[in-house]
Length: 275
Image (cartoon, rainbow, N blue to C red; front, top):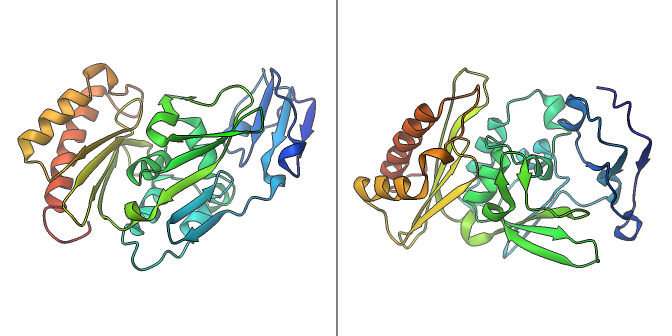
């Protein structure tokens, strides 16, 4: 879509080139949402792709993803064999239903900043305990867990003038067994519930709930809970008004599928296989 209210496009090449923030500014990375509908209040685009951030980096302590890393680049990433959570990357990429054209421009950071309940990069990052690196206006930076970054539908923790620089995923999280469950109302529909379970080598269990709720939730347990304990934890963590309600699913259906998938994930990780 043509954005006919845009007056200026700025393409910074370094952090020092980033302009002072003003009303009417919008950051441009992939632009798959930005150009999908009218933006009457937007006057200036700040194109982050010119900053030239490497899309990803693998180190002994974990994985770093730039906010401008595309879904296609993430999906092609070859992770070390010891990181057995690697299949989760592809599963979450495929939960972003779109053509190859979308995959080659849509970005990890854009998916997070949109803060849609069904955002699969939010699910991936929350399940793997990723930390957001945020560039502040004063030249400093701050760090937030993903579960604190995504606050509500289309509302994130960025302050005016702040930019999401990237994500850091610890190696310990990538070395856990995982189980993934997703459902939508139609074969190519937006996720109505997307749950991910992880299990530590020492038996610790965590369940991440997204898409069915208004913001991502991660429930951690020192050991695998029984079904009743898991049900009680979900009931305590997710009051009825936290379940999301839109054309992609009613709250009562999302609640049912969340509890059903939680049981399936618990059972899948009770044995030694990755599901």
